[in-house]
Image 1 (spheres, helix red, strand yellow):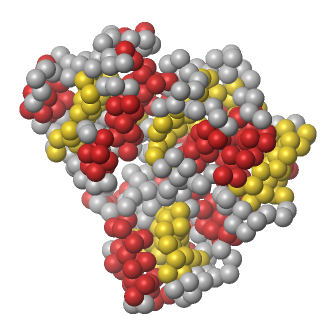
Image 2 (cartoon, helix red, strand yellow):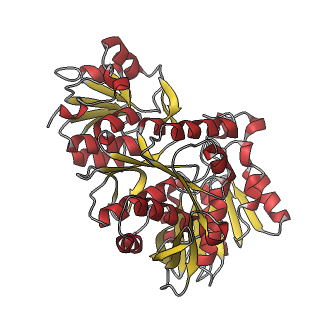
Image 3 (cartoon, rainbow, N blue to C red):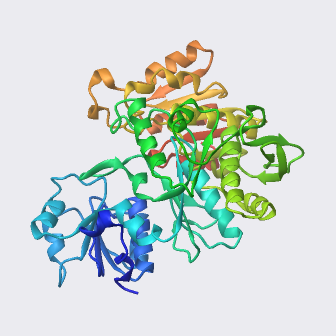
Length: 491
């Protein structure tokens, strides 16, 4: 079905997306979402090529396995390498207007579109779109939602910002009528500074919470709230909103919503959908009692730890139940969920020490993750290792907020942010300052200029039954494997 998938695009995109596209070239193809889009387009029968500034493993291996030609570096000549120009160029949000390949694209007059435009018009159109949005919990919630639907036999499509272990990938082109989209509030492209989720044709939306983040995109909390309000404004009358009822930001955003809305929260919250801890549960599992408007529907058992994951699970259960999925099938799906890579992921156990990888970077995420791991691994000490790496966390916006994020840790090891010169000196986050503030609260905390220093201190502190929780939204210099190797050697 080459070329046919783009013939039924929304009117707003018709002028820039050709009706009979065959060859699609992707700028920024090694990004997680863009590489996934390449895989989805190939499954639809398109020819896909691309370029990136750094074509290296694991994404280069992934693309090579797919058979995608990926050029190293952005050059104007890349678009002249083909027997005929690409029918469409997909422009990632990492691409600046002055990018030489983007400039050549415009010079040649090639049709162009953003990642969310193509995802929406090729894969979401004609399906019921289930969008998971919010400052926290999107990846876990959307992965669980997709898996419950999959295990119930509904064969959904999805695009998620992390690798869902049940699928071992972050996308799927299903034959069913549902599409699960992780609703990213980040901007779309250099020619479209609105959030990506506005393109996803939402029918059902989960709003997990709204806090300030992405300081490189949003001025303040009110600015980010305005984007979420725009998302809610395009939910049709036939759809519904599920909002975390104890989050002030989310409730404020939803206050003007006039469609069908249901809240969710812990049992004591009085929300429409509630979850409460139920006993007993198998080792490593959490049993939750689910109720809707006071009526208990049953129990689910999840491998996910922490209060935040109780809420993530509840929201996915609520949406699936609203779609008419039998509760027994929902419960089965929850119990079989394997989680998401880099979300509370156990990377290994050496000499009785457990090393865990987590994506947490916002102060709220760090606090919830640390608390969850303290409860999940109570027998030893908890060593929390944190690298501020996002554009927001490397600035001083949350310098004071992080002080209360590590209360449950026995030790806190902080790396200084990478590339500090990107921000002016008076606006840089300081791990040294945070370590000092934590020590004043009675928490043993240390800061380091290098990852080597972090590893050396872990090896001095650690003993059997301890847990090392590593939190970063980046690779953190492969610290997880390096720690495991050092532990195995006993050095």
